[in-house]
Image 1: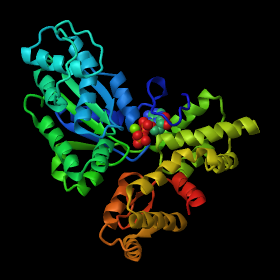
Image 2 (image 1 turned 90 degrees about the vertical axis):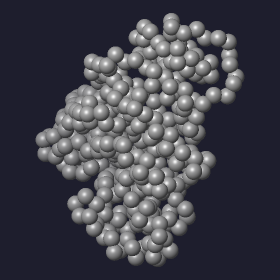
Image 3 (image 1 turned 120 degrees about the vertical axis):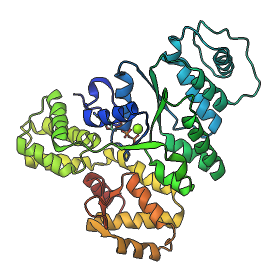
Image 4 (image 1 turned 30 degrees about the vertical axis):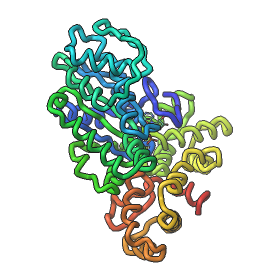
Length: 393
Ligand SMILES: Nc1ncnc2c1ncn2[C@@H]1O[C@H](COP(=O)(O)OP(=O)(O)OP(=O)(O)O)[C@@H](O)[C@H]1O
Ligand SMILES: [Mg+2]
């Protein structure tokens, strides 16, 4: 298996994850709308790629990423384009007048080239239209012959955040409300389902808006890290591709050092191990693994981690940013921190009211975890911790 670092993978570069994929499919088959939850870089987009490329009979998966979208109508315009271009309309033999009309209106207003024999497109129409209304109508009228359509929306929380930052809290709530109404529309439910995800957590943003009641229709599925066995297989498959030899103990050491076994960190480790192997020209043992791990912290890999720091700067008010920074510095230096110390740090930084929300975002977005002990937080990844210690502290 090739070592494709940095971008979501598909096809042969995707290490199969049947457990989580079957869980998603089961939930969709039960009629749920799903929110795929996992911190940054755990492999959510790659899973969506897999679903898009491996559609079970009777199911169509359509993928759209709405990272740059920051307006409600733009969101539905983008989705409408994707659905109209997808397979689902190609197979339609007869269409209701209502469907034809909405499709005509949408096609006139979207830059799109499709050949749907059952409609005729008149010349450009510049009247103002509601993309959300027309989108809802085409889904209502769509006849799937008992089959199902899954609309996968990547970076949905980012769209919400964009609307909040560029417009207002009211507009962000309206976005969630319209989406919820769409999902609950009885003419759509049962044939069209949504699978959402994003690199930032949805619940913390929605909570900030006091809008948690608007996302209760989502079934949350966690994408876990790889098991030891999976991570070991992935590492060996990558190393085999580059003809790198490694001892069994060294494989164990790699996994122990990675600690948080997400595919991305296995790839980062593999990259440096391949490099060390080329330089040293001998079987990778424990000592060479440690050499590879020092290389992971080389400046060239900083691009993968700086994004975490940037996000804090961009999204937190100055006092909250200072609190988050000091908190992460402390954890990097002392490995863990307990809730009482976090509270003290919040008081010291004069953020006793907002620090809990900041803490929750840090967990959702994959900086820290409190899995082993609810009262103690530590870095979710030892690689990230070492990076923070070296470049930020
Ligand atoms: N199943 C997999 N097989 C091989 N590589 C994977 C797999 N899942 C993820 N990766 C690797 O991990 C990295 C992150 O993957 P991906 O972009 O899918 O994650 P993500 O959770 O969508 O990230 P983000 O939160 O930044 O959007 C990529 O470098 C990709 O190559
Ligand atoms: Mg992604």
